[in-house]
Structure formats: structure tokens, C-alpha cells
Image (cartoon, rainbow, N blue to C red):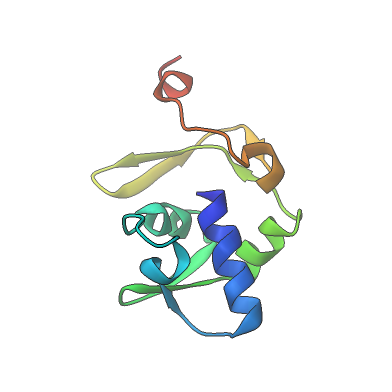
Length: 103
């Protein structure tokens, strides 16, 4: 997810507009659902099927604020956050592990 946000921020700094997931992902890649998750953290904003980073999202990519590592989601609604906070560099290239959530 962090790579999607980083690519979105890079494009946004070049031209400030909303981008579709297909414009962010490399050619041949599937359209990403990362954007839906990133919006829960307030890191991006959605306009139809297009996305732009928020100021908070750009600060996060630049090494600024830390965010909860996981969101607890039920039926598409966030109901809680994990206590553990992470930076963009903490999670860069880090795969999601369901076992981390299940204890």
C-alpha cells in the first residue's frame, strides 16, 4: 500500500489532480484496492474512481507522522485502530500478515 501512496504523491507533486488507480500502477498490473484502505487512514481522498493524496498522506510519505499499523474493519467500516504506530519506512515493502492480527 505504501508504494501506491508514494507513486500517487510523486505524480501529484508533478501535476495536482486526481489520478485513477490504473494511472498509478505499472502497466499490466491489476487496478489496486490499496486506495480504499489508504482512505481509512486519511492518507488519500477519493473523487469517484480517482484519488489524490491528502496533506497528511504526503507528510506520511515524507517521513512525518506515524499511523496505526492496522485498522479493525467490520463490513467496510473501521471500528478500531491497533495501538502500534508505524512510519512509511517501517512498512515499505513489508507484506501483510494475517497472523500478526490473530495473535
